[in-house]
Amino acid sequence: MRHVAFALLFTLVTTAADDPVQVVPRPVSPKWTEVKADADGRAWLSVGEKAAAEWELVDRAGATLDVPPGSTVAVFSAVRPGAYRVVAVAEGKLVRCVVLVGDVPPPPKPGPPDPPAPVDELVAKLQAAYKLETGATKAQDLKQLIALYLEASDFAKKSDFATAEQLFTAVAAAAAALLPDDPATGARRLGGLRKAISTDLVAVLPTDPAAALTDEVRAQASAAFARYAKALGGVAP
Image (cartoon, rainbow, N blue to C red; front, side, top):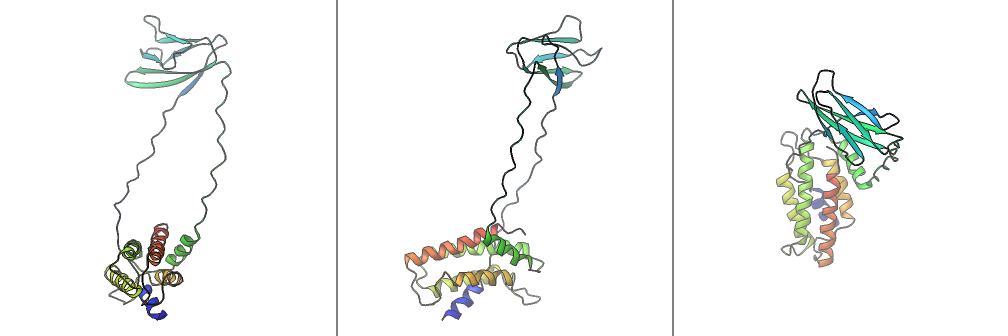
């Protein structure tokens, strides 16, 4: 009886394709030119000797920015230490600067790097088994396998299947449809990976085909299938 259940479990495989995720470049932070004010908190700003500009003082608290008539120089003044942002538009171009008044404290040092994420032993085991697979379609086959275990998890919850044999037969049929053997070689797709999973599942699922699927057994079976679907999702194709 145990060998029958194992044979049914050994056939598990699946199909499912997620929509591709598009990755966009990270926005580039604008560059701000630093200008050091004199001891009186003043600075003279210009974008060029002949360039007229429209000036804007972003940080107004305790600071002023004046542009004398006919001048291309903006006169900045502040009464207390700090960093004050100023922008100017000249000849269609945007210029940014930060006027530093007094002793401005340096920015805080970056903290220590985040610790590496803990290694999931099950994912690592499945990754090692997947790495040994040589089939040309193994990346797509992996998606199919994930889909099968998700479907198996749903099967386990259904009252349509009263015994372990009925459940495993339904899962095996789904596996045959989703991941048929290679027509050219007759080889089982992802055979090594599927064998590793089936060996583990035999230890947690009923091995007697006639075993009744109680609520407790259903919950255990559904959780086991879902656990492997999730772990396979962590395998890098």
